[in-house]
Length: 155
Image 1 (cartoon, one colour):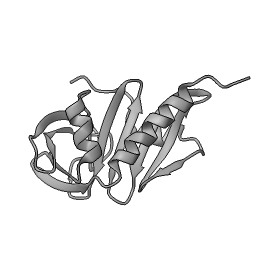
Image 2 (cartoon, helix red, strand yellow):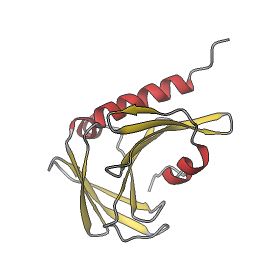
Image 3 (cartoon, one colour):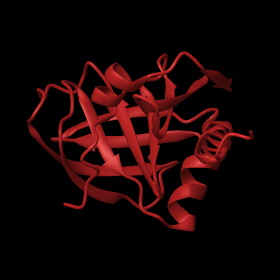
């Protein structure tokens, strides 16, 4: 599987900066490794849904106590938005109870996640529904974060 080697939780734990902005119920946080900008995290702690942008890739992650897999377990399943067509995925759990999915770089996938109301995610035969409220603002926040953080500082 073509997955980011950077894990969402590892990045969140190691590289979070103190600057954070709210986008709906998502917190937008630039991530750094020392002084080097690595990406941006949009996370809704209340719903368990988040997005991680690194370069031109976006990863969706969803955390639920209903998911019984442990860190390092193989996770397979599918996801869909608002009852639409399901997209299959396969990944390795970065943390317990968290499914991490590469978001396809397609207009359809991004439109579904930004305009949809509900994400249905089946991981290792367990289905959990997540709210996507605020998804559009979260993606706008990620775009702004990626643009402003990657731009060189003015002298």
